Amino acid sequence: MRILQALFFPPEQPGGVSSMVPFMLDRFNKRGWEMELFSLPKRVRGKGTGEIRFSTFDWEPYAGHPVVDKYIQTIKDYIWWTKMRIKSTYDLIHAHHPIAGLVMKQLFPDTPLIMTVHSSYERELVLNGKIPADGPEHAFLTSLYRELEEKADQLITVSNSFKHYLSEYVQEPERIGVIPNGFDEKRFRPVHHENQVPQLISVCRLVPAKGLDTLLHACAELKRRGQPFVLHLIGDGPIRTELEELAQQLGIYEETIFYGYMLHPEDFMPFFDVFVLPSRAEAFGSVFAEAALCGLAVVGTNVGGIAEQIEHGTNGLLVPVNDVQALATALEKVIGDPMYRYQLSRVALEKALKTYSMTRVVQQLRNVYRTYRKAPPAE
Image: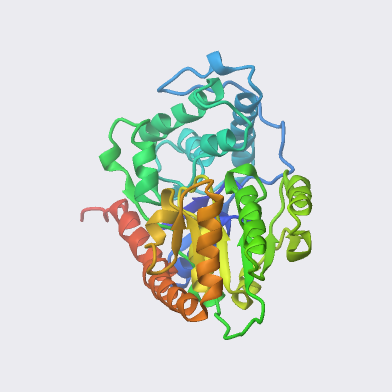
């Protein structure tokens, strides 16, 4: 059975999906499946031409808005690149981005399409202040979910929370499958260590949706309470300068280290004590599972897929979104009590190994793929 895994970003790009799919593909190929990766290189911009049509809505009333125009052009570019590069046929296509899914079904209408929706682009844009909630760009992007439902043979998402979110925009939400992300256990190696000063770490793109301003304010509160710490921020993004200035204003710049982008943060994470990320929204929150697999105690916000990964007080701590005092108190609790921190991290590691292993994902996807296996010809 020949399967194409269609990404949007190239595999070397950061992010849960791009870092997960190549490892998943390797597992399948070692078991005798034939799989290939496909994605759109960054250098392909403005190449595609032609008319774009959707079967469930008319996109042209939204034309003229930069986000919409860029999205449409990217679809054209993906079509152009796909026609240039794909000369083979496949028994099944598994797409991991709406653009990849829509293009593949347009160009290969007779090939079964599995579509995994990993995150909400429109919600990220709203939280990052790029588009207004319920504006034309938001309406365009959410209309794509109905289009995907119409075109894909099977819709999958990564958490029950995100399935509930999608249910507002599709006709048959009960048909959406849920397969949480999985991670190659061999990549993560917890390390026994003792840090005299508690080490906090956060790994994410530096954008407003991740709530790092709340984290910095919470760390300033920790300092006011006399709690020593060092905060390590791995990642880059448009608000890095703003966050560095905020750390200075709050008097915690000496306790905060900005690393910028790092290709393999999982090699670095096991030497810290607590992973914390007060996101304002997460469809799944892959980095929490990765932190748990690294043996860290985890602290997150009670939203989306984070709340499905963390059982408060058992394998981590949950706090409300934008609540500086609650976050500071949670951090104080885990960094001030090493035994409690160890207990949280041990249970988190056990759950992550059981629930978010790549072995589990491969098994679930194998069952889905076999549904579309062609029957042998009758003799």
